[in-house]
Amino acid sequence: MNVDEQGCPSWCIEKHRDPEVISHEGVVHCVDLLGGGNDRQFLEIRTVQYLPIDTRESSSNAPSMVEIAYHFGSRYRVLNLTGASARELAHVLLANAEALDGNQPTCEVY
Image (cartoon, rainbow, N blue to C red; front, side, top):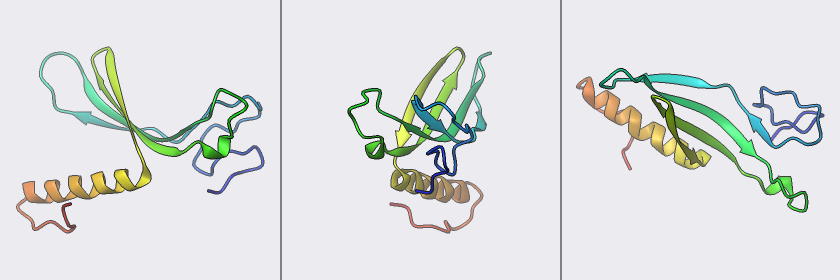
């Protein structure tokens, strides 16, 4: 992983100057979902890395993840995926979206 002089990964949008950094966060992408009722439903997707609070733990062991937050009304749930799991999910979503359009999937479904 490429890091800058402050130790931030290349995808981190916060250019930290404080040595007490507890997380790195990438750009947030939002996807609106269809839903019933008056509550807006959407997904927030971003790259994150949460660093250990215990200073005795090495920050090099903190994995970077793809974080998906499902928002519904005033509540939300968070799902963290490894890079491999995020790529697998992307392939499955693409295959299903292509099937909706009557097309043959362009990727193999696992």
